[in-house]
Image (tube, rainbow, N blue to C red; front, top):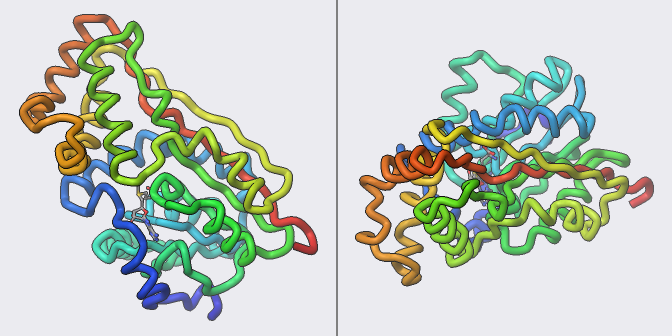
Length: 289
Ligand SMILES: C[S@@+](CC[C@H](N)C(=O)[O-])C[C@H]1O[C@@H](n2cnc3c(N)ncnc32)[C@H](O)[C@@H]1O
């Protein structure tokens, strides 16, 4: 099917049932958290996409598009001669992404429901995925699958977090404790919170060539509300896994007041908050592969 005509399919219907559930759900608060998170890493994302060589006229597949943030950034880079297909298995997220696409009058993006582990409609000049490998149990297999759907010499671009970089400097005990809950909470839930450190090897193992990678680290001032808000938002979404796994009780986390307590503790300690580093890596499909 031509990319411009890509539409909702039930690709990977059975695989979707088998694939593990996205850790963070799709509630209103989770959508708001994804918007804030996307805004905080939009500049890093643009840097990776441009460095990798995403350019006008390309046909690009966006894996795990969510609310379409990356698809909309790609839309500007590929221009009216290019096309972007964003796939996700979360119907609610795609519905919001589609509403936003229509409201913004964006015509070179389409959204398709499907499983990133099995989707195979169309051949692309580039496959992009941000914050998706984090959630996939077998990332190399998925990358290899999509590398096979690239044009010869086509680009694979992956962007993901290294949550191992999260810290306060100088260390603030409450922040460090919350960081531990977050990292272990993701692990308990089957996600890989430090996958950003491994993007280069993952692309190489999937058969990509000319692989390049670098990371972007933000430093938040002690009185910047973004760090406490992001950390509290993630912990609120992960709380069921954290409590079920016995990492902490609801009383210990006290989520209702956590954001404010984190903000106060960082200010009292004059501490810089380091959010997850954002790693980007890209490689090309080997000629003849
Ligand atoms: C953290 S969000 C990232 C969204 C978007 N890529 C961004 O960076 O703003 C992860 C997204 O991956 C989707 N996802 C997770 N596993 C998936 C799979 N196997 N197939 C398709 N989508 C998946 C989730 O539904 C969710 O929308």
